Image 1 (cartoon, rainbow, N blue to C red):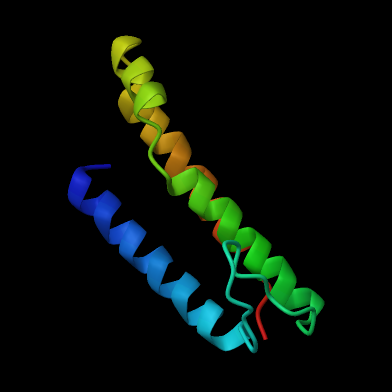
Image 2 (cartoon, rainbow, N blue to C red):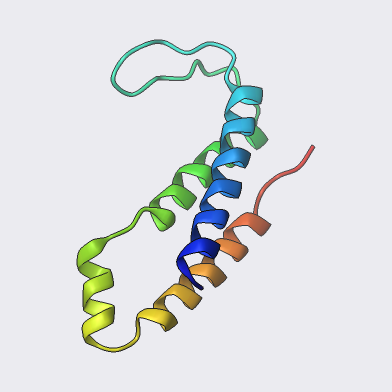
Length: 95
């Protein structure tokens, strides 16, 4: 996956996450963790947890990527990353 494809993927996932956040956030208490009141459905909570996990997969880890470059498997790492993201997105609950 080249850099442009990676950016496009990130944009799509960010837009989906933002849309879900706008739909599911009813009341946000303003503090360092943006606590959500416990009024969401099980589906909304699942999707919120899934979004956070997806963000953790998307978030670049320079030391791991450098390790992959050193071991000459960076592109394979990005392929695995994409497969994991595809699978994670298949776990989303839909209305």
